[in-house]
Length: 434
Ligand SMILES: *[C@@H]1O[C@H](CO)[C@@H](O)[C@H](O)[C@H]1NC(C)=O
Image 1 (tube, protein in one colour):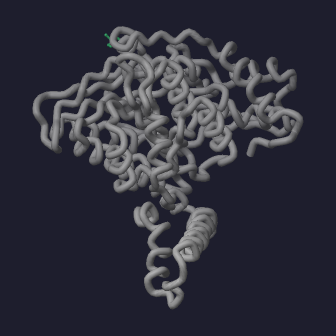
Image 2 (image 1 turned 180 degrees about the vertical axis):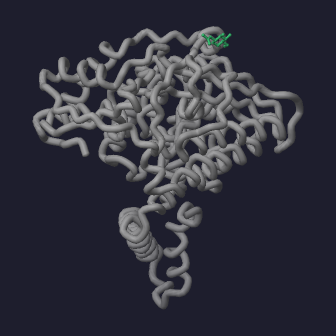
Image 3 (image 1 turned 120 degrees about the horizontal axis):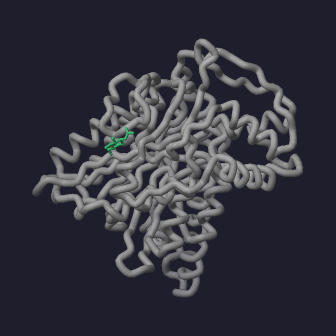
C-alpha cells in the first residue's frame, strides 16, 4: 500500500504531457489536473472501503481457522499522524507502549489506564471473530474517545510491526494479543499455535531488532500450573504438566521468552493471570455466559470434580490485574541488546497475578443469582477432561514484593460492578450477548 502515498498527483501530470490538448491554456490544464486527481482519489477511496470487507467475508466463509490471517490496509501520512498522536508521551518520564490485543478485555483496560496517567499508547488488534466482534468494536470506540488509536493488523505481520517501530521508538511492549480459552483448542488448535507461538515469536523478532530494544511485558497464564495439586501455586513450582493446548502454548511462550532474553538481551516479564473478570469482559468466560443464561432463564452447567469435589477459581478483578500490569511495566528494566546483539544480561521475570482466595464456582452462581435477582437453573456436570483443571490458587507474594501488587476487590464487589456494566451494555434487550 506504500505506493498510495505518492500517487494522487502523478496521473494528472502524465495525462497533461500525453494529451492532444496540451497546447490549451494553462488554466484548462490545471482544471484537468484537478479533475483527474479527483477521479483518482475517488478510485483510491472506493478501493479502501471495498477491500477490507470483501477480503474478510471471503476468509470467513472459506476457512474459519484463517480468520485471523487477514491483513488490513495501512500506510499513508494521515495514518502515521494518528499513530504518533496516540503514542505521544504526555507525562514526565512517561513511556510509550505498544499494546497488542488492545481491543481485548485486559488490553482495553490497560491501554486506558496508561493513557490516563500520561503514557503514550498505541493499540494493535486483528479484531478476529473468536467472540462477538461488536464488543471489541465498542471497546475500540471507548479507547478512541480517550485518545488511543488501535491499528488493525495481525501480530504475525512482521512488516507492519517493523513499520510501527519505524514510526514510534516504543520503550515498552505490553503483549496481550493471544488466542484464549481452553476448550476451543479442540475445535481450532492451529489458531493457538498461530497467535500464542508464531505471533509471540514475530513480536520478539521485531523487538530484538528494534533500536532501542523495548522492554516487554506479556500475558502468560495460570493454566501453566496444569494438573499441579500443591497449593497455592508459586512461580517456582513445576509447570510441565499442562492440561490443555492453550496451557501448553503459554508454557512454550515462557520458554521462548527465556531464549530471547538469553540470546538477544531482551527484558521480558511474563504475567500469569488467574481468571480475570469484570466490566467489558470476555463472553466466553463462565461468569459472563452464566449471567446471560441466568437472565434468559436458560439452564447453566456447573462442573463438579470426581467424588463431588469442588471446582474453584482464584477470580481476579480487572482493576487489580491492571495495577499488576502497570507495576510490571514500571519495574521493567531496559533491554540490553542493540542491533540484534546482546550486550549484557537482561531482566527475565515471571509473576502470578491472582487474588489468593479461590471461590467455588457454585458460590459464583449464588452471588450472580442475588445480584440479578433471578434463580439459576443449575445442572451439575462431571468436569470434562478437556482442559479445565479443578482449582487455581495463586501465591502472589513475589508480585507483592517486587511489583507492589495488592489485589483489593473480592468476588462479590467485582461481580456487582460487572453486573451493573452488563445490564447497562446489553440492557433493554437492544443488544444480546452471543
Ligand atoms: C509463596 O511464594 C514465596 C516465593 O515467592 C515462597 O517463599 C513462599 O513459601 C510461598 N508460600 C506458600 C504458602 O507456598
